[in-house]
Length: 105
Image (cartoon, rainbow, N blue to C red):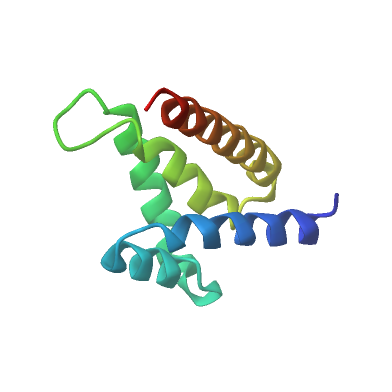
């Protein structure tokens, strides 16, 4: 896979993820994904990653770590492929869990 292919795949996956978010969150994610927002995206990604390490505190959570990594993957090519693998694994696991829960219901 090439870097362009990886970035296109990340964009597709983030489009699907963004479609499932509430309106205000989808709009925020969409604006952060714009190329001109790089000056804002990187500091926010680093804040999310830092907040993920403080996930044991109220309000902050471990959920912030993968969000920060996905935001950072847009601008740091070394992170892109591992982030895609983690996102793919998460989607598969979520799909399997949902199918198990629907079979039990």
